[in-house]
Length: 541
Image (cartoon, rainbow, N blue to C red; front, side, top):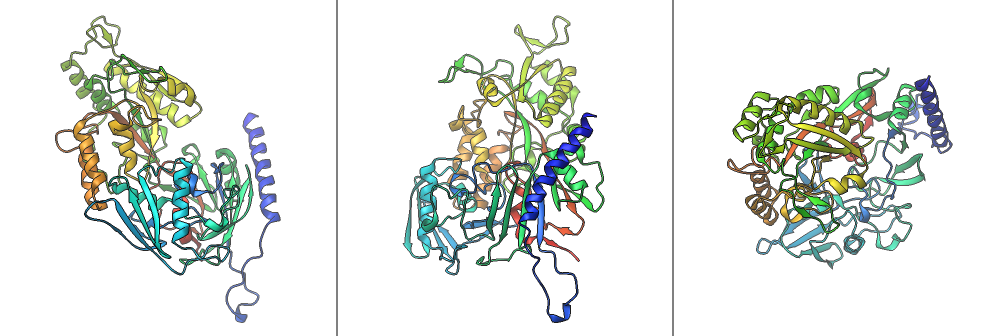
């Protein structure tokens, strides 16, 4: 009865939202010539169901567009389907080889905003200065100044060399200085492939093709994004009311007539971060730092060895995912040598015994120097995948004699305990700088970055070399060495500061006739990563 009532409520929500969308339904575009009269017109609309809504709006200077297409804005550079960096608004860029701090970008001269005004270097300067002043998730603290040297040339000067600054040029959509105000986030104007038509908060977003767009034109004249929860999105797909719906793994085995399941590889990972240092210190807020059990590398390595990652994929993710060994699996800066043999209970037991961990009192829990191998693993309450992963890992550790108690809670609760206890967290980005944030000693105790206070001087040195590199190829060599150089590194083959578990496939129900192009490796599930290549989507015959 409960499921029946919930299903009725879900369908009621869908009906209301679709009614709103229907009230704004535009007339299909006519195609062909007079000889085509009487034939069915080309379908130029698309309706999609996504659970996440950009609550803060569509302002790139405060973070919009960093997880998927910015839709309304263009960026200086972008990544292609193979994650190579290519030009967008830029026609070229150069990095000063002598100091590595001066970046010069040449712009296209044929670009207009959707209101018909030209996009020039002053708009680029205004965008980056605004983003810097906003001090939001757009981290531009490395930027010293940005200048327009002429109408279509921009010069960025950094405080110090940083190869990952290129990702700021990839991720930051350009806003118009002449049309930027306090309400810009709700009424964006840009030079991207789409224009905003209507945003009904909590319900839907309607966009239309931007006729001023300078690059590949959208196949669709109108796209509607419905903000539906997972159950409601699945119900909408079953009812044939949406062309694409983001769904959880729990629904992946249910067939929907006329739709196919698209499983997209990701670096949307989940893993356990360990306190790396011994206990005894406290943060400025008085929260404890360190854990005497996980400070022992044998414990961290044993957990990594004993976890059966494929079993987690098969059991928790219904087979829709991949084992994870780092935070950057499969990306150009990933070191494949970080892959280890897992599910090795015997090997993990032997390692612990050699390290002095033994069950001296017969209670099934190992001890060393009077210290019990007991841990509390924190995870975000309400997140079914994290909870299921935590339960499964705790069960896998029992044969080792490592006792893991589970604690689900809010982020506020986790924040108080995350420096002294293992926590199940998730990351995933197309920017290698994220790895630096997670593992760099500079970021120990900063926000949710290096929560375990991990530090390795050699890893830090590799990070510094990667950041000073003047090309992505050169930087990638050092990112890879930071993970494992044959002797040390941040991965499970080295310090094992994390036990990475799985990369979660992003699952979509897609109408059989809808071609969504070649999906790139998706990033963490914030936003709409599937839309990265939305201008390539089309209906097939």
